[in-house]
Length: 60
Ligand SMILES: [Zn+2]
Image 1 (cartoon, rainbow, N blue to C red):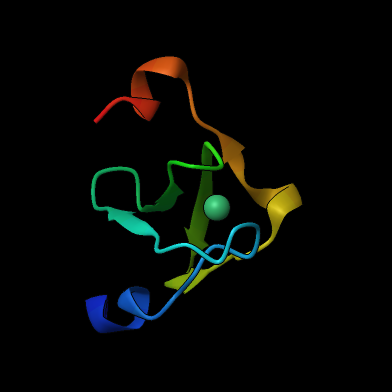
Image 2: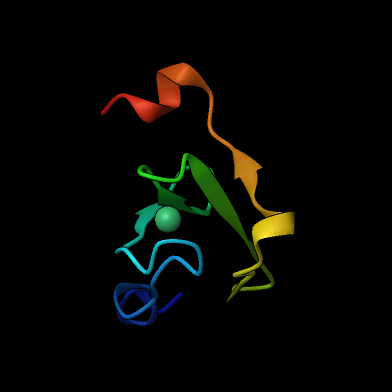
């Protein structure tokens, strides 16, 4: 997987930087509390596909 690709991705919601979560293979936006899935190495940058982060996950 190309990590450089993820560095240029921004949250479609707030345009903020996303954090790549290696364990869950998700792209996290803390301000929005959303986790965007990566399917077949392709980030799914759709709000309605994103998972809502739990309260624990929102804390760094
Ligand atoms: Zn966001």
